[in-house]
Image (cartoon, rainbow, N blue to C red):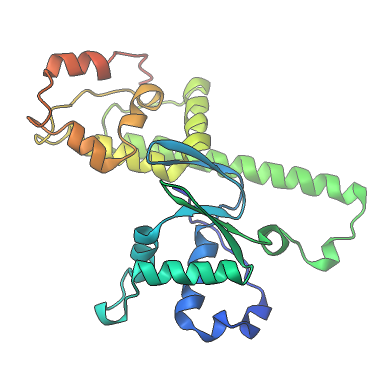
Length: 257
């Protein structure tokens, strides 16, 4: 899942487009901009790792329908089929490209970098002496953002009181960063929530308490899809012997408490 923090840019010339005169099309176009990755990232789609470049996102008829109609009265909702037709009309107008596979639809917002990455014209003609500190400043900001995500994940894990970590060393920090690069911080948070819900509920037979580093190394992939995880670990549904399942899932690892 792509994080939806920060902001996007919308050019004023949008007011002169046909999209602006149709409120549904305008809303769908904004959803496209909100969904688009702002930098290269990876996302798990039906168990497949998909690399997304800036301006790209993965969607589908049902996903669009859910996003578009969230909080909308029934009478004003728009069907997924209609939304996909609108999306194709954007492609016809050369606003975006659409590539469909048997698993998902990949959408690329055209000219993304022209609008989202551009600076003000007054900042384009800069000297090489000024460009270097600007680059360092951006790199420092990126590092700070990543550190915030690492701390957020660490604190979120401790809030569940599964195995509380008093300190965060380099090994744990690096492992968190690896998973942020792989999945994104939001998906890690959701996986932790799913794991916590399963081990603390009598509805599920799995109750092994990993350390955070072991969860990230060997457990997180089992909990990124909440529906699948709850189905797999529901008591009495799959006929697997509990001890055999623990031998597979619950190898004791290094504790960083």
